[in-house]
Length: 77
Image 1: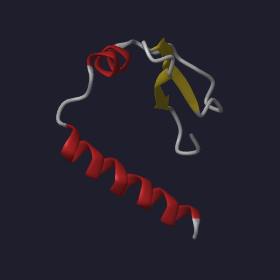
Image 2: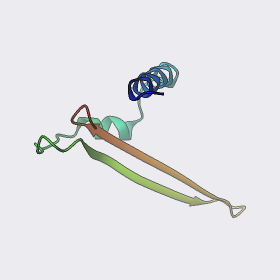
Image 3: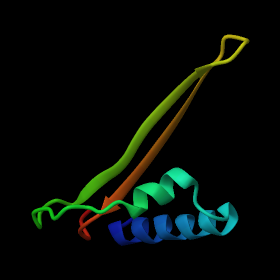
């Protein structure tokens, strides 16, 4: 599969997911609304949000939830 095919597949999956997801969660809206400073033109992307939440249930199971938001600054990003 070529790079272009990969990008098209990712775009299709993202569009399909957004059609079923409804509105984005509050943490993503907050991250997207942040002002991003200027970066050198060779910086491909910047992390807006990086969070990990670990919970131990009553039965002793560990549940880990990770949330990430990245803003792509260049087409290489």
